[in-house]
Amino acid sequence: MIHYHPVPGRIYDLIFIGAVYYDYKSFVIRNQENSFEATPKITTEIHQFIRRANEIDDKAISILFTFQHDFRLFWIRFIMSSRTFFSFESMEDFFEWLEGLDPTLLLTHFLSFLDNQAKSRQDYEALFADYEKLGDFISALDLEDSAKYQIVSLCLSPKNCIQKISRTFRKMNEIMDQIEDRFSNYINTLREHLLLEEEITEVTKYTSFNWNVKKYDSLIYTLSFIDDSAIHCQSAGSEAHFILGANAGYYSCCFHERIDLVTLGSTLSDQRRIDILNLLENGERYATEIAQILKIPNNTLFYHLNQLLAANLISTRISGRKTFYSLKSKTFKAISDYFENYYKIIAEKEKENEMLEVKV
View 1 (cartoon, rainbow, N blue to C red):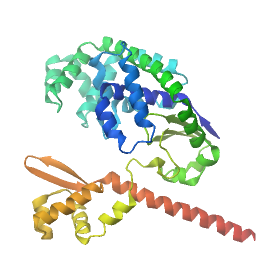
View 2 (cartoon, rainbow, N blue to C red):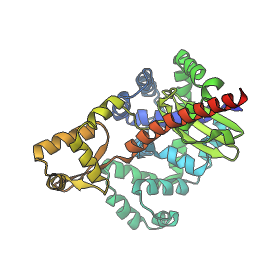
View 3 (cartoon, one colour):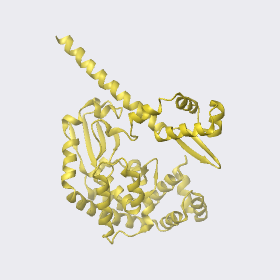
View 4 (tube, rainbow, N blue to C red):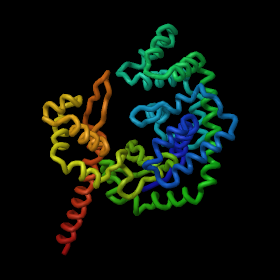
């Protein structure tokens, strides 16, 4: 059985409304290149709505909506660690959960998110008992001074922080009502396209997630209209939960990294670039090392490195005066999934043909 549940997608969109409002320019720049056609229009509309909504003007909580690790915003990570998006039966259920949050628990998660280190929750909780240590911890974060000031403000008035967050989410929910009304035709088209049972049950929809969905009794879907890619999937006993973005198409819905096969083929057509990739299999290297090991002139090396960077096959890390290069694991995982998807489709068809031959 397949069901559509609108509440998780709405909550997901409220988080992105916060990101659009508090960090509008960089949000649009990050998303406009690969966005579905209507997505930039929606983000622009959101920005205009919120500018007219005077109730949302508290910058103290902005960092809670804009800070991210590995393209995952804090609120998404926090909700996933506290409850699943699909556990909220209504928007009022979500707001009541927000207003009942222990502010220390919320801010402990946020400090952990900012720090991105393998420490226990108790380590971060202890900071609230010693403001001097808390100040030292925040000062050591690799953030701009304005962001550090916002974090200090949140930590010094946690109860007030929860009240501001609740008011902001409620106002953004009103704005999302207006957005859905404004883009009703676009949103209805998405629902019709993505939530057809025939489309959803296609093997290609799920093999990209590397899930055997046949073992689940029911599949529950929601849609995000602001984020435009396939987003998240998880199991809950005999149920499978999926959050799909606006651009979740037949083949491309499940790739966080876009695969341009033409660019990929062109990039891998040169043996020297393959040699660079083979060298980086063993870990990151800086440019001089690569040039010496592969005996490539510097100007030639940087040409090939730029080609690999453009194809999203490698990434860089700057340390002092050195630039280190490494393989971009997400891209290679996406490439692997892409061709694994083809294999599973072919295997499924071959199995069907064999069964038909046996019956004949």
